[in-house]
Image 1 (cartoon, rainbow, N blue to C red):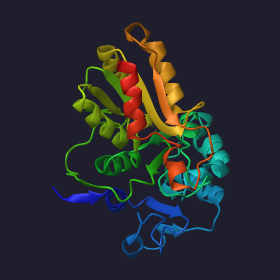
Image 2 (cartoon, rainbow, N blue to C red):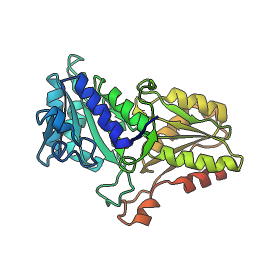
Image 3 (tube, helix red, strand yellow):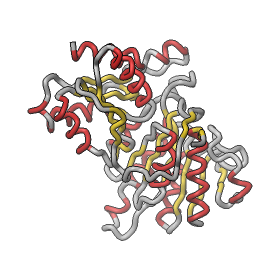
Length: 324
């Protein structure tokens, strides 16, 4: 199987979709001639032209507002925000308009758009360019949310997102763009909204997504050498949320942990831990534990940044404490 980088899988997904559907176009800052902040759209303007690779002024509200209007008019835009940190400037367009249009129009019209952006730590980009704000999106009814953690999922989740009738926020982790994997993209993907069990174990269930999948898998390998076996669930999408897979695995094992790079307080880990506690209470041997980001701004310091979010060592240590 050929090796493919995460950013190239995303690019291939866009190319394949744009060749199939002339209504798809990409809009954002420097997505055309420059090729995107992380190189995902590099070279696409040569094939599809400036009408389908639309470079915009530096105005996130204008980018998302244009995409919403175009989607309502029958197009299928892919809007790119350089950083998820800027999503706050688009909250009216995204949360009050895109997320609510189908409801407000009684189902007569939708907003079939994809908002591509990136989040997370790992590039020493500072407090205003390193956040994990997926909880903002997950909190808003009407928005779908995909967060691929593998090259295979980067391709297939983006392809699936471009077929949805409602707005999809597609968050790519900035530390994954250069990651390569041997991957056969012709293998059929799981259904949209379906989680994947990456590893089976008897001692602990760990629910996670995006880059933390790799940290959890690394910790699981180390724990296995000590005789501790964990189940690893990669959610792939947070809305739709495949809670049936979570429930089935937790009921088998009886212990659960949620790992997220987002801030601990009122974050994705908090929501998932609460729901596991409510719906799997009779099967739990211990309280559900959250391993998440510190409730602090992200430092530009490499070491401070690294230690402000979960890593393999913290995950491993927490599991050992729970199963001791």
